Structures are given as C-alpha cells and as structure tokens.
Image 1 (tube, rainbow, N blue to C red):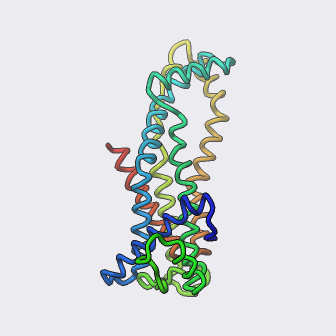
Image 2: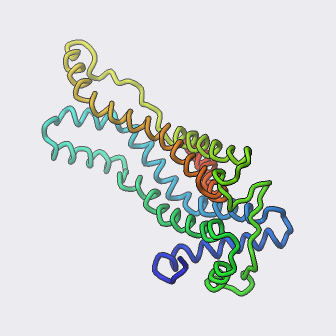
Image 3: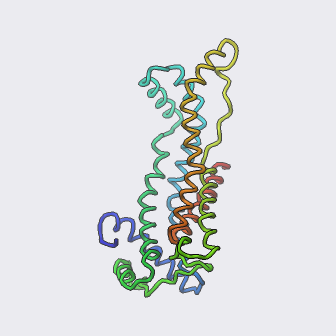
Length: 271
C-alpha cells in the first residue's frame, strides 16, 4: 500500500505525514487519546483546505436553483428544439456569470483526498500496531522527528481499530447510529429549498397550457423526488452499515467531516 507511485506520492504520503505530525503534537502535550484527536485535527485541516471548492459548489447550486423558473420558461418556449434550448440555457448562464461545471469541482477534488484519507487511516486501524506497518510508515515520513514506535488506538473509551460488529460492547453500537444521523442531517442541509410556485402559466386562457406543462414535467419531477428520497434516507443507512463493519476510527473521521459540512452548509445558506 505504501509503494511509491503517482497517487501515493501526491496524496497518501502528505496526508500520512500530516496525521503523524498531529499525533506527535498531541503526544507531546500529553493529551489522552492523542490518535483520536489527530484524526479530528487532520479531518478539520482537510475540510478547511477544501472549503473554497465547497463554497463555490454551494454558491453555484444556489444560483442555479434561483434560475430554475427562467430555465423552465425557456425550455417550454423552445420545446422540441433541444439545440436551441441548450443555447438559450448557456446564454442565461453566461449572463448570470455561472459555470455549471463549477458545481462538480468540489466532488472531483475530494474524491482522491477521500481515498487517500481512507488508505492512510486503514494503515493504522486495519493493521493495528504491527511492527512491519510502523516500519513502512517511518520510511515515508518527511522528517526523522516524525518517526513513531507504535500507535495507541484508544480514544474516549473506544478502541479506534475495532469495529462495532466485532466489539461485542453495547456503546460501540451508538457509533453507526450517530454516523447515520449525521449523514442524514448533512443530506438534509445540502438539499436546496424548493422554489416558490410559479404562476406564469396558470392564469386565464393559459390554464390548459399549465396543465400540459405539469404533465410534461411530471415524470422528471417524480424521478427527481425519488432520487432525493434515496439520498436522504437510503444513503445514511448505507453509511451507518459501513460504520458498523469498519473500525471506529474511520467513523470518527466521517462524523467530523459531516459536522463540518453541516455547519458550512448552514453558514453559507444564511449568509
């Protein structure tokens, strides 16, 4: 897992060094549960590092949600002419200073970071304090002062290397429940509010046109609602199950990331 290649050199090694750096700091100041606090510090650092991409994604999503009624009107006006609809939509995006692709930037950037974080934590948590793993880690640390002899996985009464499924202890089962709840709250926070109902096509002689438009949109809206329902309920359940089967340390990382996401979503939405 620590063989030098483009991915490990670019992502895994820097994150691994940061994790050990934070761990050594908390050990130096003699804080119990140093490795748990190192995971929290690393997650917070990565989240803050990605904040500009995250902010851009949310702002783009908010602007596009505000523009949806205008986009719907254009789609209706040029119905049947997909090329014209695309051109008009792009023209409206340009006038509003919106790049639709910018909304995906945060997701694209965080994918390799997530994988690298998982790989880094897995080295410690899935392999325990095995001498061979510690030796491999020490070989890729950037400074001799960062070298470690072992890792103490205990944090606030939890063994971070142990999964709730294997613990046999009742309070470990609270971790997957908490993880699923935080993921639910994060999904809820990131879901844009529904725009107010538009009356443009629903008065006077346009009643029939309004009904036709509703029929045209019904299938798309039903599909969107189904997708939102899956994201809101099924995805948190999936994450909760993963939290049940994986080491608690990985759940700690995911939960801290979710808490930061919820706070940042709410802060940006109210700004």
